Image (cartoon, rainbow, N blue to C red; front, side):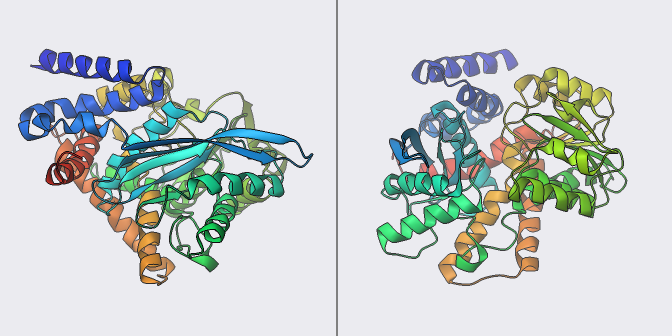
Length: 451
């Protein structure tokens, strides 16, 4: 039977690759999902007859546009702008904007496809989308970033709205960029609505939104650990990245009693055997969010730490790994090294940070592995909570939002356990997240007819 399923998976992927050539990240994301879903779809012929899976792999709308802007020298620059509106079966499109030189159609389609399932898992009424540009905010002045964001939003505003498509931040898009884009949207549309999430607290933002992805990632890891009678107390934790997700994953893991010993950026990683406590984390936040410096500067301030250039932190011995940087940052060899060094829990804060070979290692060794679409759903869940507050013209307290976030992550974990528990009792979170996310969207698509 397994061979018959594999043949169906291969046929499905061959068609998808032929229709979407040269989009390897998109192929990878779909492959990982389809392997879990084809057996489930075969057992549920209503989904097969309606070609739900095929339809979910095709964006409802793909928007591409040019973004011209002027730099501080007065020279004209031109970037590409994108918005992939993937699926609106359960709510308005929802998903981040990424500003990074590596942005292309394949990466955004992978992110939008993952977003559909992730948003479904949150149980909130949100469809899936993703967008961005190959613009690089690094090294640009505030005025250059503002001019780019205003030009980008001048086109994007035609396609988004509080009940249509609600973008958020992602890599390269933080509070500064959201502010500039929101200002331009308001100026052009003459309306103050909850059209972007990740806004400043003074103008419609939600408490806990900056912390949400990292906090949720750790809450999910804590739920996985509970299934084996464990918690974070005394555990050695490796975190990759040093941006928003990594910072707050570090904060929450430390609050729960873990010792975070690594952070990284594109130049390499730092290893601090004494642990990155609250005071050290405050230094990192200032370094990265205000000074926009490099992580190696941490070692100038704390000489007991060492900087390892050109590498990722997966060679460091740990109990829990929290990949929080970018896609495909853990390959098969990294995963083998993690497991050999005693790591038994991986919870993903980034989108698809583990390659298929790495995932194979996790499943084969039966370690606790929370895939991004489940483990990092806290960010978009809190974006959904921001949308709710905007719609009601209310602002909830920090404790209230954090409690709602925590409950959502507990429910996502329960959903993964429901669909992912295998006959030997092992919880396959990949299978659980894929099927759990799929069912809600599939049922909505069936109900709404062939659209």
